[in-house]
Image (cartoon, rainbow, N blue to C red; front, side, top):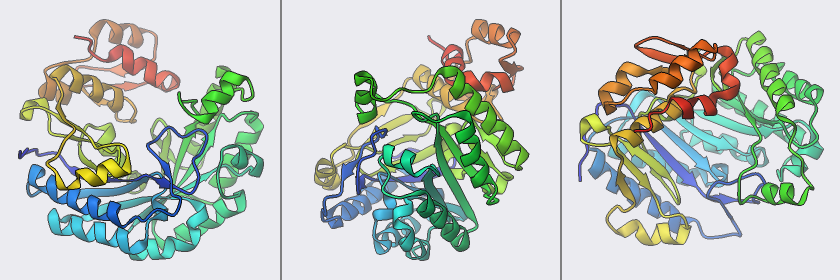
Length: 383
């Protein structure tokens, strides 16, 4: 199989191992337990070679290491993956090479950057030690700030990642934590509202009544506070949860997701999307979940490929495209899928002041950002 596409191409590497499993996490992760990682690294490299046969000669605009805890990877293995990517596809001159870093591995950041990483997302998560313990993190607030300082000394592009709307957190608590991080002069901030996902330890605690999520009104107040404080600090909310000091500090890799670009997902449970209905069909890919199954499949032809219908592709593009400040390009949506947003829902949402739209584009109004997922679901075509 070979698929041609004019879109930018990214590469996502999922490292599934963690020193411990956080109780809020619903990602495909496994406790490291001292497992030999060499077979997984070899499987990643083999998977990349198979994907090169599918994509053809296209330079990569981004490579992103996520997880899991990719800062647990040996620097030499990170370098091998990047070198393989360069050999197979080539990297654009300004390619973003990012990695999600746990503050517990802050002593390894210099080696990680030496391996070729040029953007670091530091999982500070909170500046409250008790909250970090409840979140299952293996670092304290001081370690988070130290990791952020080290990262900023090593690379020009650093994100501080925080979680708010936590159990027992007040609006004043969140204001203090967020203000302290912003006072450092960070150029990118990812602030995520804690969501309780099915199957997680937190979901079981909610069911038992030992964990109580904050009221929706308080979570909404925290979101509004986030917009105000980040804006005052010069960080534009270019996506619902992401704030940057100008275009240079925006996440290029995540933009592929939000704008319906192309990306290859390698590693256990990784997902990818390639091409569009207008180019013969958008291909969705999901790798085997368990590391052992992923490793076993590394010598076999690619599996887990699915051709999305034009409607399914359009629904995905609407759900993701509304998240960014630029909004959804309706002209591109129609040309790629033959579908448009739901006209009746759009008119009602426009009349309510929740979206701004014209024939070419639709985007969330400031008051609509609180209801982004709900609005996107309403606007997505239903066939």
